[in-house]
Amino acid sequence: MIELFEHQKRGVEIANEHQRFAFFWSPGTGKTMAMLSIWKERPMRTLVVASKSIIGTAWAKDSLLLKVPLKVVHHANRAKRLKLIEEPGDHVLVTNYEQFRAHAPLLLKSGVQRVIFDESSKLKNRKAKTSIEAHKFCDAVREVYLLSGTPSPNCPTELWSQLRCLGIRASTASFYSWAHRYFIPIMQPGRGGKQVIGRWLPKPEMVGQFNESLRPWSEALRKEDCLDLPEQVDQMREVEL
Image 1 (cartoon, rainbow, N blue to C red):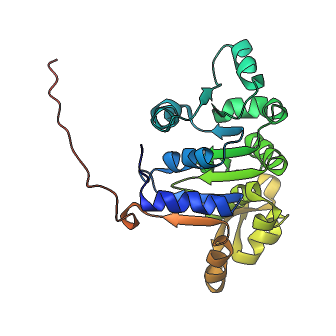
Image 2: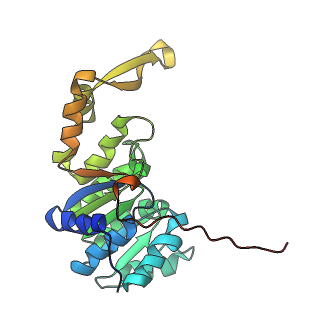
């Protein structure tokens, strides 16, 4: 029996109360285990979209510990991918961002009711094809959860596309109406001498309101805030070369 840490238990409680939420927890806080525990409490056909590098090391490993039925569908064999996607059942499907973009309509048609985007900062570009597919996909499913330790590595305006996955209420319908409310556009020369927006700077008087606007939709958690995490254990292995 796997015992969750207190912050992971709280994460499950938050998900039970909110069908759309972003867990901006630092790396190493156990986001994967918390999300799989949500499935244990409320099983439904779930899609996890994650980077290839963490599918085997995090999702597949933790699903075995929690005995959650998980099917990896980013195989190179297209026929096998399609067969796994179409297989009925309330299990967890996991794929990478590239395969999600390619098969989003089919995944939706298969009956997915919950989607989890791991490292949701990959959706930061609101104009990217993957982000556009994610927005449409999230509008059509019941539950949406975002996971990221660094949701806006370059600029807070990168949060808009992620918030759009949580719904129009979270982001407002228009990027520019949202951005101009909280940020100042810094112009720079573009093609043909036209002025274009180079970057956005926060309005000092709106920082508090901006943070408050995120509170109903997200939780930020640093590793040092998880006081019940065990101490780091270093294990040395000698390898003869």
